[in-house]
Image (cartoon, rainbow, N blue to C red; front, side, top):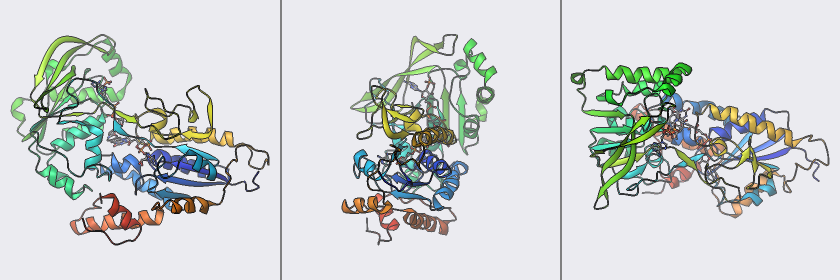
Length: 465
Ligand SMILES: Cc1cc2nc3c(=O)[nH]c(=O)nc-3n(C[C@H](O)[C@H](O)[C@H](O)COP(=O)(O)OP(=O)(O)OC[C@H]3O[C@@H](n4cnc5c(N)ncnc54)[C@H](O)[C@@H]3O)c2cc1C
Ligand SMILES: NC(=O)c1ccc[n+]([C@@H]2O[C@H](COP(=O)([O-])OP(=O)(O)OC[C@H]3O[C@@H](n4cnc5c(N)ncnc54)[C@H](OP(=O)(O)O)[C@@H]3O)[C@@H](O)[C@H]2O)c1
């Protein structure tokens, strides 16, 4: 039993959930040493690689997360992939507890015929592309004039807006140069968003929806025949101010006269249309078939059998994200999360996995705003500190790590030739991205290729493309 009573904790995933968990843990009464692992060369998770580039106010959350990490009491170890560079047994050697906060990066599947056709895409992949994620293709096929977006959540709104927006209106943002150039060449004129339920059941946030009405040279078009409100809808409108605002915005748009629509691009919002098939020819998308649905009374819908075909050349499914399993960690294949009880990880039989915790989207599924990951992290840390018990008790079984020297994990990764990027490395990359933006009056321009990010962070010369 060690006499060093500093609790050693690894947090895996430097998105908001991981950073908040580390921050909250660092402020407890425990004497704690925290390492924050991240597979990407840069921290901040979906705040950097999910939040839309034209939402600078939300991107500013990075400033608050940055302040937590620059204090220096939480050590960032980026460019380290859990599962490849180290696994649970390795972490157990160096840490008493491990918190997984690995989020979600992939699309939920949608089992309809034709979904595998060329021209049918997942929203998560498109988001990763336009937000400059280093591990996705650098080019995106933007050849469609008419596009369908499936789903009625905020991701569907982001995707529809980025597709429809004129690239020059995105130029002041941090979008990478290749993203600007490809969006600039896009021939898109019409983006059709399909919600399978009614206007009172959409999951848009009021602010994000209203914003759609202010995109330059893009008209929002809704169809009065899609507006139906059953008892369930009325109950939702009366019980939720958000739903009331969303319905008001949508209903106001029904009052627009057709001649008011003069923009060169349009976003059409369709309700009560369930996608049933992506239509193809020669392996490529040529259309979308939807079935008209009818509200049941409780806000849910049933298909009416009435089919509509929409001539579109691309389909983006924005029907939710889905978590990915992690090596040696239990995984719930149905919910796409690490099974847990309020953050304490359990195995398939419901037994506790000692010393292992989860927080954020990988704990509770891919729903909720950045702020929600904070309350979520509080719950996980509360349980971890309860489990840690009394650090002065020499028989406390929670303090299991054999190798407690903070440098030991650095040596371990060096032996495996991992180019670990610490906070000073992120500072170099941050400064470099800002220097790319500065001559153009932009806050930053994102650097995309992973090897370039690593080179800059480690102070090496940039390799030529
Ligand atoms: C497209 C999109 C836009 C959004 N926009 C907004 C918005 O405008 N406002 C808002 O409030 N919320 C928004 N959200 C929601 C918000 O992004 C999430 O609530 C939040 O990011 C979840 O935090 P997280 O830390 O659990 O996951 P993430 O942010 O996904 O962070 C997980 C981190 O873990 C890392 N990781 C994964 N696997 C490993 C591994 N094996 N080893 C090491 N590291 C690993 C990832 O690289 C990532 O950095 C948006 C979500 C999406 C998908
Ligand atoms: N600006 C922002 O604040 C922002 C931006 C992006 C994301 N986010 C947040 O990130 C989280 C994830 O967003 P999200 O849009 O991925 O998820 P979401 O809010 O859960 O929305 C998913 C949408 O997909 C629909 N859907 C699911 N399965 C479907 C199917 N089989 N066929 C047709 N439609 C289907 C859902 O319809 P049903 O309701 O009928 O199931 C719903 O409209 C949310 O909490 C969101 O608020 C926030």
